[in-house]
Length: 447
Image 1 (cartoon, rainbow, N blue to C red):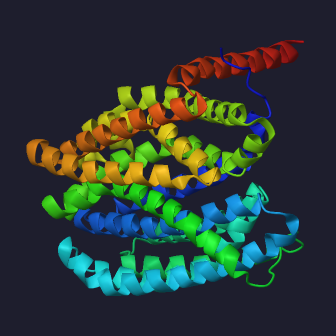
Image 2: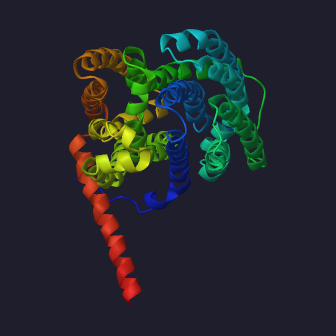
Image 3: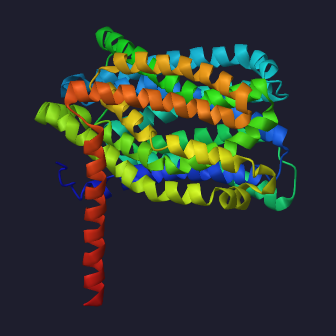
């Protein structure tokens, strides 16, 4: 039987949700103007660039943020400063390795996708990758403190600058250069890092002596969450990469609008995932398996309750939305959107499964599962792309998500007694609670 949701859940994640809304909104705004300023081949280059750089940022979340937050909220207060120092050292080493790898792979990747100019964007991003160290370190500290307001402010300062630059160039009628846009990103990251430092002043967390044992623990926790996040992003990026290789960069541009619109629907998943992550270890300590079952069921059901109306709307009006936002040249993306919108309903189950596993320092299972799915996704995408063209990539990715969903639900039932039906029941509880709040407001207004 579904438990009654706590109304505090409706308000306590407002800044986390706002942060995710801002990320998707500005990314959407960027593409809205870029498709009106650049040919489809250049849009394809930009999509490939952002997909690779998104993986680098995901690497940091998996290898640095997740083990850092999980350990920081769980260790005795006297060891927290050592955890902060060890995480920063590990982060610096990782950033250096990633930048070197990006510099070495820039030219081969550009040739692989036949994407002229892509290598120069990667060369620039290698510098931005280093500047991300202080910015993200400060963000991770705020995550551990559940200070989502500070995270929202610093992140908006970073992502709004490139969007404003694009709008300004569009308004002036000048031709935009992708190289200049990446330069603006670098400047924005540096400014946001300074703002993050200012907002963290007076924090309870500081830096202490380097403890090699803690460094080793972070590394071993991080290697699995790193692998998990890489596999997850690989699953999400396989479609665009294989379209770029097997079809063209213009094909990537046609496919991407469906993904961008799907990302809008995913906002609640990412926001609630950030909110839940630091709380799972607490619930496990306080209430055991029942606590984990409760937080998983409530978070997934709340995400789905939020998403369902938008999913139905997007499915019915796919053509209208694509033409209105991206223009008639991208009308082919409407049929792709009707496929991709289905796996946005599966993602909350899969994402929160990973959140639970990582929070409870048990990322190994999630890692192996996602590696399996990543391999299957490559195979499915290749087969369906050959058989159906661009939309085949959407079919292949949907099949991959369905398989991981089934496996996740089996594991959750056996370990924590979590059932899919329990989540479905809870969705109606959220609607009932929301309708009750609306009725109270109507009555209060009438009186």
